[in-house]
Image (cartoon, rainbow, N blue to C red; front, side):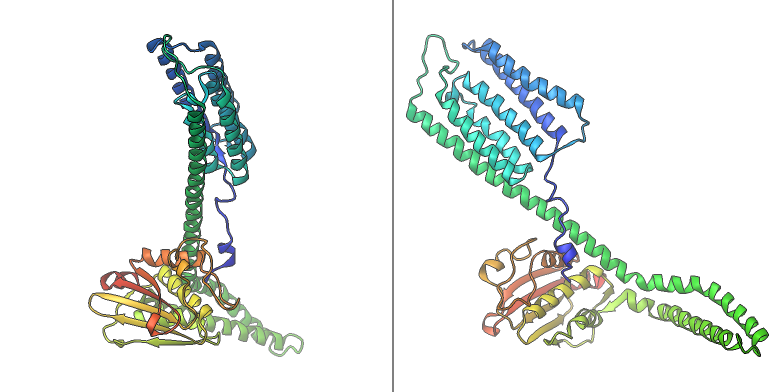
Length: 434
């Protein structure tokens, strides 16, 4: 059930590229913010400030941004090295502004973290780590700034070395923590997007397979006319060449085989018509038997337990997602079982429950806390024949939850060794989705 081509597919993770337009807009915000801040400090607060030097640095950022906007289309995506260069330039420009306006004593010094956070959220890890080291170097460099913080002309703002050291530690700590957090959140979002894309592919494949009966019937109908023509021509040829020693036997064989093909197509068409309702609607017992059947040939005993019997069992629409999800869970149980897997089916007026238990070693405690996450590590196992519990289990869990089910993963505990998965639907939902 856990298709390797889907399990190892990487939809967005391999392409962690940044759109240029996004970076351009962020930089215009930076230009506007820096300009407003400098003007406010110089004109409103009337603090002493190297306006000319700050204007040059802000103009440099604006000029680079303008060139990028004119040179590249808005949809252009930056390669990691190009994005790293631009973020490094932003970091250098911000460090220059801080250097000439008081260094770490400047209250805007924590803004050095911004390019690093953007990098960890959108670039490969090795590029981001390089930018983090560069940012720490810039933070260290501006601690030796000889320029005072813009302040009242008749007062001297003294920042003691121990305070500068504390500020440096705070900025580096915040930079590292925020970078790590941004990277984790970004990677989890990408992994989830990839896994959901794989889920949609699996669901489409299952729907396609369930529609093959209809396609077969349509093909049989379409082939009926040309095959009838072939049969008529073969009969005419047989009548004319029946006594011919060279071709008589071959023509008879051609006619008999054309008749045989017509019989096969007739049976296909009638089988589809007779079973169409059966294929569209499934009793719960038929659904379970269909899911269990492919897994009975692997040397593991697969027992079905029905405490309520089959009287009054729910009957609902055939659902490819439920078939795939239950099949994947049973496959995992068979993979990890030593001798036996037990599937218990219960139903009453309110709910339908399916419990899948194996006699393996069960779920490891650390796996239980993360089970169902995409690309998680495998369940602890004693041999290598058992499969993993990564993307396949995530897909199964997602498809079953979409059908209205609630899944619970646990170990059997006092009932014996092994894992237990319990899937519960409200009966009204199951009768619509089954």
